[in-house]
Amino acid sequence: MKEDVFKIIFPLSRKQPWLADKAIELQNLLYKDCTSEEHRLLVIELLDRFVHISSENFSSLINELAESIVSDPSLSDGTTQILSMTADYNADSGQYILYALKAPFERYGWRSHLLITNYGRSLKEYNRKKGIHKNIVLVDEFVGSGATVIGRVNSIKQQYLQAGIEDISIKVKVLVCSSVGFEKIKKENIDIESLVTLKRGISDCYDTEDAQEKLKLMDELELKLSPKYKDRDLPKHGYGGTESLYTRDDGNTPNSVFPFFWWPILSDNSDRKTLLIRAMEDA
Image 1 (tube, one colour):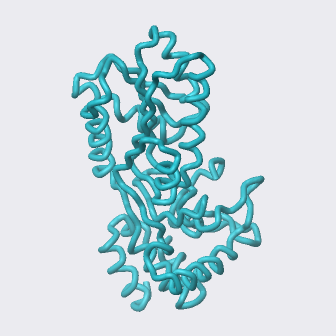
Image 2: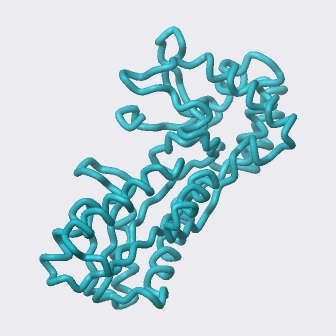
Image 3: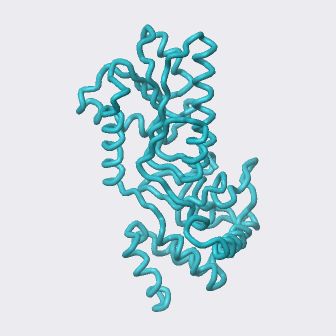
């Protein structure tokens, strides 16, 4: 590694230890994908602000999430159903969080609640258990634009109302949420708690004029990427314009993260080695 490259990558890796094992990917990002010093400096600033959840941090957050649920005075073991945000039977982060909560709930002596892997089965399980689980908690790892949460909550409310049931409560508790999504959800009068809330990586970190200049630089970087994958558009500045800077050990990068860090196809349709990984069938 050249000395000038090392002088940039080494201190960045000390600030963000998760980058230590990604020296080659980081070098490509900074000196292949970035073709100007302005682009490079922007990417370094963004990397410096990334929120990284290590495996150890993830375990702590799961325990914190479980504690938030069991200590909530409006919730009790025998009247609560915990729902994954998942809409179908494909593997996703909501089901992962649901499974991870099983052991912490046992430690707290919670054994009569319902764990439901598909939010659409809430009413069916409610009826199957004789209508006693009236408190609903939707869980997930990450919330980006907030659109999914709003849609899930509205869908659940509609299902119960159509069945003539009005006395249910719905809460949302997640590990991480973008500030964009959090505000949208709160405006819908949805009860949401996020253990970590992410600012927009550019718009919330500079004054207005500087932010506009930085966003233009990001536009230039994103133009290097393919605008589509199959029928999915490149999520400009992160899906919903959330500008997220987030990664988790062994995690599937949310599409709310700036695609420059994970979109693996260049504008000429050639493959690109990326710093972060997202399963493109979820793109």
